[in-house]
Amino acid sequence: MEPRRDKPTAPLTPRERELLQWSAHGKSAEDISCILGVTTNTVESHHRNIREKLDAINIAHAIVKALRRHEIQI
Image (cartoon, rainbow, N blue to C red; front, top):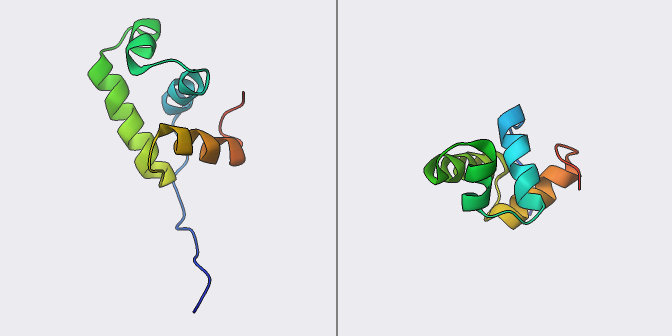
């Protein structure tokens, strides 16, 4: 059996990185929506896009993957 190869992923946009950075600091979607002046639905939409781009099962997993790719810092 061949080793599993990760599929190439698109880089995060600056806004996605900003949003994920807030998530990495423990902020909820509602907190982030207030900080950035957007709706909670917008934050959740960004979270979906981030998970899809990073092939992550949840935001915690996305944070780890983004850290490993040096897309965000904590």
